[in-house]
Length: 124
Image (tube, rainbow, N blue to C red; front, side):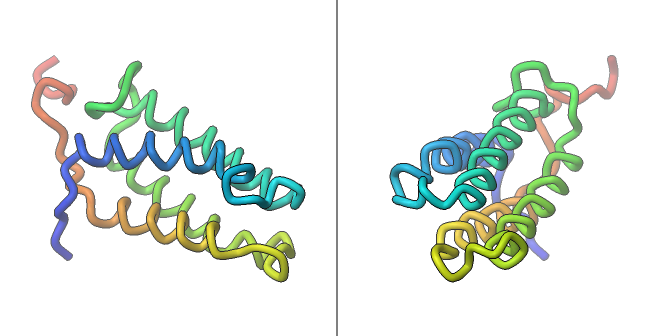
């Protein structure tokens, strides 16, 4: 499978997704569905924390390897995709969880895991 998303673009995707996940329940009008809201907010918080600590252009503390970050994106995406049925809110809302989950899985699969040399630990 061909990887086409560079890590700097992935950083923008991460922080954009975090904003959507954190603000989504109110913007997308499912704030009254507690389990759906919790899944989005918890996922958004996880994306922010993972991004801040990842060794890539969007990272601040840069201790988590990019390959681990991408694996977590896929796992989180699958969780988001399945959460409407796991937590039983699929009869009230599911589309945004499926869309954000799909985006997370695809960005995890299609991002080039190689970060710029200045961000790698090799040679240090």
